[in-house]
View (spheres, rainbow, N blue to C red):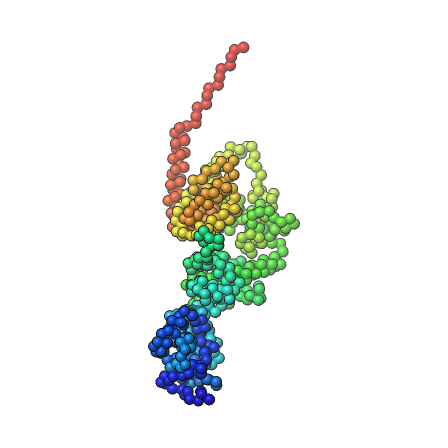
Length: 531
């Protein structure tokens, strides 16, 4: 046999190309045709400068590394190629292939990841991430994130190989469960119309994908209503504490991007299954729990879940002032009971509520005539305080909107904003419109129609501001408005105390001016004519 003339050596020798076969474990599986043609022209003129490495096999020689030079030599019409022939174990071959390919600039990250995976899967010798990192001169975190690329779904892997997405996009996608990767892949792109029949697909920056994942996939585990250590809540899912899809489980993998906001769940489907199981378990253990909804809209006929207008939620936090302490939501009554939210936001959480519509504390009757003056004075005071609070809130909202730094894409911004406006009530739409100097007449279709027309003419900066303001107004309608504004103000570094002080001064000045002018003199009654 011809293979008998080829013996292992430490000096390169000319080896017939016909004896060589590519290695099935070579990390590099994709070769650029144009680059191969260019290399073949160089080999045709000057030959192969660097020898390939091969090892003896039963029916010839297996290429350890140098397959690209081998392919280009075939294209160039060569019959032999310089090669070093060595006896090597499977583990040594994998190591050599990995190190050699890492020294090449054009090796694809997916091929690099496959190489690491093959080393880890060896039965003998065994490798750890730390050992591989030491061999190739990389950090353990780098090896861990590269290995994660092998978890890409077929659609995402194909897009990565075809250079439709970058390595930053691919690494983020790979950290998501397979069922979340396809919708996340779509979020990597936007469609731009340039006058043609079909839109052009444009790749968005990695930060856009990161934002999409944070808002559409990730769920903060500290806010979960269920016991995160209960492995039997959903037996197929197990405990959150041991779950590899939790960002806090593997800080090497999630630390720099998806793990910045604390421990989060990357699997919304599993999270929702645990919420549902928790609700069912809580109701089974305590059938007297009142079921309530925080959602807006009409309740389904025959539903046992109480809608928002059929109960008063008792606040857990202490009132901030004596006046606030008088409000019904800070008081308990003899009808106060525990309830669990089963529809809307915050599903699975337990709250104290009063669901008795005849309760004198939470559903008081109208004030009697004797106390009319006192009641009216109290109402005037509350209205004045509410007006100051509203004005302060709107000023803070305006300052927050002015501080919004992100300039997003108009098509996406407009889509999100139109959806937000559609779920805002009329009063909050009017607030949002007034923030931007929009006034409308009743016969012009109302604030929503006028605002949407304004939005469609607005630039991306104005739309970004409107989105933040709309979200704050929506959140304030469902939760503690003061707390929502405070959180937003802290994020955008808005001085709420200074704004509040200025508003109080303005109201005081108006009240003073009103007192100085005094009530308008009433016209004297006309004298009656003599009969």
